[in-house]
Image (tube, rainbow, N blue to C red; front, side, top):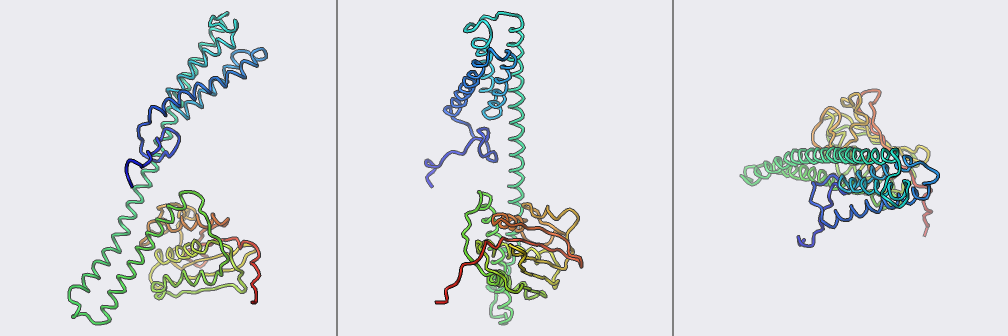
Length: 374
């Protein structure tokens, strides 16, 4: 991309993209804020002018104070101070007797004008400070998320890369000295670790896409049996070392969903169970119809959830129950986003017999279309 054609990032204090680092605003942007503050003051003068016979001056002054607060919050202290001075002048000229003059006819009017000006200055300063504090809070949260992401990615990419490098080095070092079984085992390590990296990168891309706004779902009618089969086949090597029970309810209807996203949801739930339970621990996956929903349940017989983790583990960069291995702490967060995008829900709980249980409820989407016998 040509840098000259790249659009400048929005300034955080303009009320847009507060997570970005601040960049200087242009003179045109600053002038726009001051012109807008003048426009707001003029607009507030109209109802005050029309109601000056029915309301006292101090009541009308409240209109201007509200305007100053809004200007300070959205456009900063400078435009708010400008609005404060203009409000005092407008109140004197249009609202206070004698009208259309900057002369003040009574001590009470002097007090009203003075108090309004002081209150406007104080409020505008406090509002600007509050707004700045909110920006710094958001910026700190964004920085924390960036650090968490970098830490997770650097750690979780380094592990498979190390394994791939070691296996490839053994294959390249003295291949003649390796038996066919050893070569196959090293090749399997390279393949499995590369697939692990691919899933991590896919999760990062999915989270970026889901955070950009409500996803554009590409819904079609899908068989849940096929989606479950595709997801479990991608983890075939890891599931082969586990007792794996698959229970599909009878007569499951077709599901009107984005097939790729639901497949990713199933994949993440299974991989989450694999990552957080000891080797050889049984896993269970079941699908059943519950009214207008299909319930997908992935459970294990591992250590289970710690108290209070039932909702926390669905937050970004939270690795969840008992640490586990692998993962950037994004898998379950993506599952929640996918379920919610389809109008469904997802939750977690401990199994009565021990272990953790994750249940996703996805709306069926109405009656499936009739299939022509032709």
